[in-house]
Image (cartoon, rainbow, N blue to C red):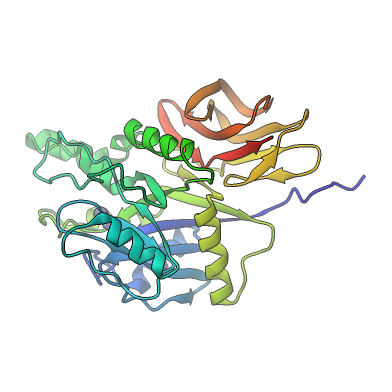
Length: 350
Ligand SMILES: [Zn+2]
Ligand SMILES: [Zn+2]
């Protein structure tokens, strides 16, 4: 019997929040693309500080999109996508003005590394989202480099060396306060407030440069925090169309953030009812057969969070369960204490 809906979706791995030599990154666009290709990515979004001097297009099969990290000197970094010209940080550091400028250009943005740790064992001041009452379009819930910086320990030579040698063990899971804020934003919005995960591949020039940058080569970084988007129609070969497809999925929250350093494989989260099927970022009507279907590459803790509260938590490889009530459901998958995957919410409505 023919299926009522298309089960086979096209999935594409991509990375966002990447710096090049146009700001404080250590590599050219060509070098970043080479690394992206090696890391198995189909698309990347380059977000240099306060400029968009990147020639967009397909490079060796990788869709390269220019975004911007609007970066005031101290706090409130904002990842802006879908804008046509670079936006400078507001003179008066009025965050709302920045958000409005992005929207005026038809773009959308994500609060970057909003909860960098205040207590750090190093000399780099945290860059945070200072006023949580200013509501961004979305949230960067996990940022590899920022989190490494949170736990970089410069106390002595031993701790410093460990911070580099065991760098991946410092990036355990997103900050609780960021997840909580994201859940709150979703609770008070009738839409999905989307999340992305960033690599923040760059040097430390904004702060100070103290070690060779090649310690974090792009190829390694681009194999860490990844976004998987899924689409019914394949990614177009025409750049403008492909760019639109990718930005639309991120804007609607049709992606899952996951750290490929923790496990290989790609997470899958879907909700079905009698009529149809949706992926993260989607909305579906509740009926008696509405269920969520989650797949992981191996046994891990699969948590379902409904409207900010734990709905279910199981040790499984696959998990299918009925959803009895309307609400916004998102999924977390953890392996051995490490966060692996964080899906955007799926909204189940009456
Ligand atoms: Zn930043
Ligand atoms: Zn950055």
